[in-house]
Length: 447
Image: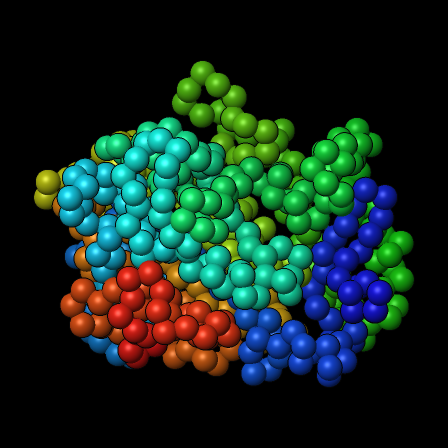
């Protein structure tokens, strides 16, 4: 096993900690073999989903091109306006009812990354299409430990009826390996952490985790000898990078432990599941940090994160909204409901801003940030939740893709341009040559 492969991980008894890529251990040939950007740094692709549409009058920006101004709901993104593109007038035609009748929330969730029409069934005969992240994973996933990473704040559901005769599989899964194979997301931060940094199969990892808990030891305690050896082989910049990274691993581990011990109880007569924070924002941000660690260590280059499934009726008492999100989304133009929805829209934008902040803070192998060497889509499968509209979807494209994208603009498309056109572009940038995806009509202009 060569030095590069051996040093992708620190290993100890029952532990395996993935590492960032170090310039000190990369020769030119290794860099070229892994190159996905012009600099040789890996290129990351992420999709973050928010449910139930938005209030467009406070979401859509003012002005076009680089002179645009962010509207109220997207104000949290102001520090990153040069790193994002806001895309208007994109549509998912297969989200509309057609002959299928009700079920717009299931279709919104199902179409957002596939561009395909879900077969209307609540049984086992589900059928949709492969999602854009999995097309990319098939092409580049062999270069990383995990071909892709699927995250959520909701428990996974693959069966049963959820929305007007549609299977729950459509409503709770963003990522699809194929027409009948949803990729179930993980919502427990502890299990994500153990998947990324534990060692062995599921049963072994559980046993090792229980042993660490019993001994009151961190996962890092088990790899210190390997870390010390590696530290001496690195240049000064990489030594600092290793120290900062290991501190970050321990901070995330401590946050998970705190959630397990002191998690707030929900407003039901049931304890919160182990390892999942009772506070929604903490849960979201912990999952974001885990996703960024996966990118930083090149454990994967492709991730999806459903902040909540479409149709979610979660309340937001911490920000003064006690009613359920789905209930409010049927506002019938009522001023009170619409104002509360604007507050929720801004809350979700704040979580995306946190993602952008963290991505901008982590330096990559070329000295650029993860944000620079990535492309991330933040979107909902509905625009107007009251009308169940799949037209003029709220879409933000963040990142520079290592110099292959042109952020810092509001880009309007022709009315009802398929959102799948955007995915043609992103797949091409990822190194997957294609002219079609889902219901696309070609690549998207102007990105």
